[in-house]
Length: 110
Image (cartoon, rainbow, N blue to C red; front, side):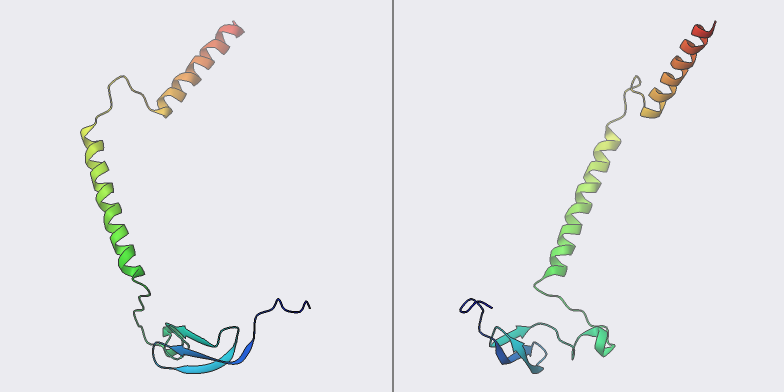
C-alpha cells in the first residue's frame, strides 16, 4: 500500500437515523446522518410507512400531472386534424406495391 493516500478510518463512527436510532460502525467519516435505518424501515418492521425523501414523491406527481395535461392537449389537436383523403397508410402503400410487383412478374412470365 502506498503511504499517505488513504483516508483516515474511524472504527467508532456514529450513525444516527431520523427516527432517533443510533449505532456505531466503521467509516471514513466520524458521524453519518441517514433518513431510514433497519429499526424504522418498512421491510424490517412490517408496517407500511410512507417515506418521502427530499420531496421526490411530490416532484413525481407534478411531473405526471404535466405529462397528462400535455397528452390531453395533443389528443385534442389530433382530433381536430383529419387526414387528407389522398393520404394513405403505410399498410396501404405496401399492399399497392405488392400488387404492382405481382403484375410485373405476371407480365414477364407471359
